[in-house]
Length: 171
Image 1: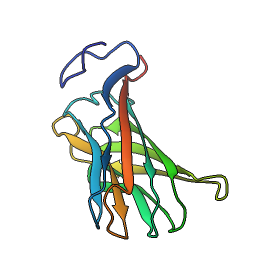
Image 2: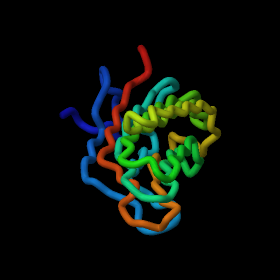
Image 3: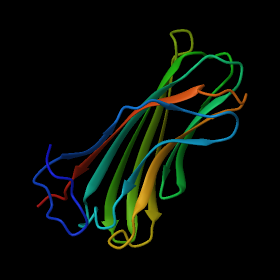
Image 4: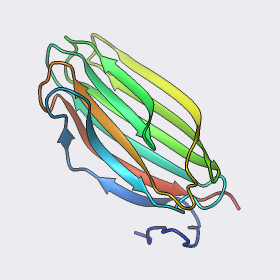
């Protein structure tokens, strides 16, 4: 594995894997809980068009309550998708692409998909936004997934993994 790109470091020649987390984590009781997150270092997106790709996945288990998966960038909710009670064992995936437009502006594209058992079919939600942020050259920010079970059961929304890749701006 190549060296992790740090603030002020030289840009990598191509796509670079920054993080792989495959430790399962689940929601705890009622309310929205942070599942997995990644801290983007100050200066990690040093050039306009530098890009980060996030791939997260998990499963919503069986219960009689609505379960929700959320995606956040720098504290702003970029996607939220829920499945109704009675739909069990639904796999989910969230992909987020963040591209630096300037030191204070990011282009954020998030796709959230639930793949239900055969009787319910898949549901996909796509959201794109330009987000004003504190200077990414000087400030870190966090990208995270959240899970919530309206029935207050623990581990009804689980995240199995998070992969983060960096792609430098084209030369």
